[in-house]
Amino acid sequence: MSNVLPEDEKDTIRDFHHWIVVARRIVHDSFTGDDKELQRMTLQTAEGLMLDHRLGAIEDHLAEIKTALNDKE
Image (tube, rainbow, N blue to C red):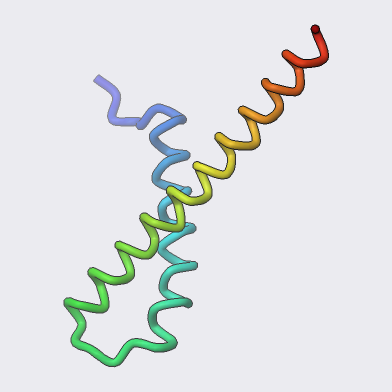
């Protein structure tokens, strides 16, 4: 059995790592609490950023579908 991850899982991991890096820049600049809270806030911020990004992509795709359907009418 191979231990290689499927491409979609690799992409998800890569994407989340990107958002962790972005979140660190945002959270670490203004944070004054302990390390555990810093880690929690960083992960929470990264998750929110990633979900916002994905939602934006979904909304763009839906707008394209709507335009394509309207063009057919």
